[in-house]
Structure formats: structure tokens, C-alpha cells
Image 1: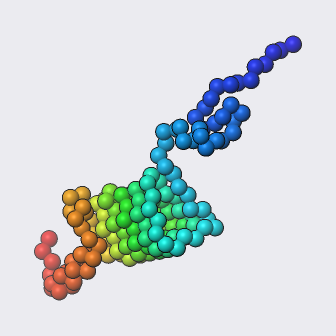
Image 2 (image 1 turned 90 degrees about the horizontal axis):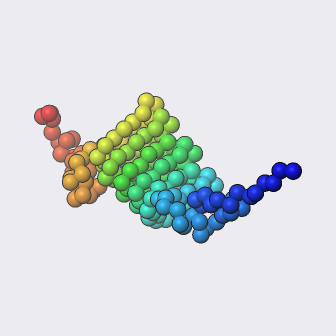
Image 3 (image 1 turned 30 degrees about the vertical axis):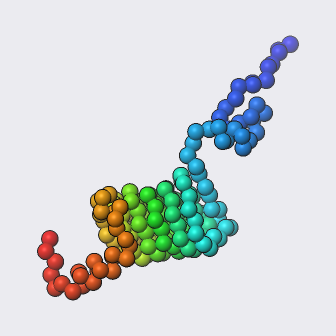
Length: 160
């Protein structure tokens, strides 16, 4: 007769009987991940650390580190973030101190101020876009875009 022993080794985030527990999740050294799921609508101000995955809908103000708008997600907001990846819909103003990535399923409308801009083939970007260095972004106010646009509109030619 074979004698089998239960495996009592602990894996991160799992208890001895392979149950996900809050205590074990707190002890793992992963960054915060928050999810706004497909049936959730948030109207107001969101401020988050770590990653925020949006499958639902956000209306209002959004501040955070890394924002990912999935294909089913939509955001109608002013966003002040480090990095934002858009696979769904975004309408409003974006200030991204690191990068804006528009995936092939993404649609962006409004104003964008960012350091790095990546638009995949098929992605739609209908926005006033200003790319700046990191130092310029630190002191940049998105209201400054109005003055930049007006000064360009008033010139008959632009020296490059």
C-alpha cells in the first residue's frame, strides 16, 4: 500500500489547503492592483497607487501611477498619471509623466500632454497632443495647452 503525504509547502498567497487568504496576500511583495470591473460605474474622484485596470466606466478625476483601460473599459475624465495604456475609450485630458500607449483597439479624444507617445496601428488618437521632457512636465499645467494652441493658430508659418 502506498503512503501519500499531504503537501504542506506554502506558496505565496495560498494557505496550506490552497485557499486564497487576505493575510497571505498582504505578505506577498507585489504592487497594488485595483480593478474596476465591467459592471461597475464610478462617478467622482479616483486616486490610486500601483496599477488600476479599468473594464468598467469612470467619470470624473483620475490620479494614479499605472492605468490600463481594457477594451471593454471607458474613461471620461481628467487624468494625471505616470503611465496610461488605452485599449478601450478615453475622452478628456491626460497628463502622463512617463507614457501614453494607445493600443490597436483604443480610442482617445481630448487633450494629451505626455513624455512618450506610442500609437499602435489601428489605434485612434483625436487629440491636441503635446510631448514634453520630464522636467517640463513637472511644472506643466494642462491649461497651458490653450496658450500653445492659440499661439500656433495665430502664426501663419511655423519654423521647424
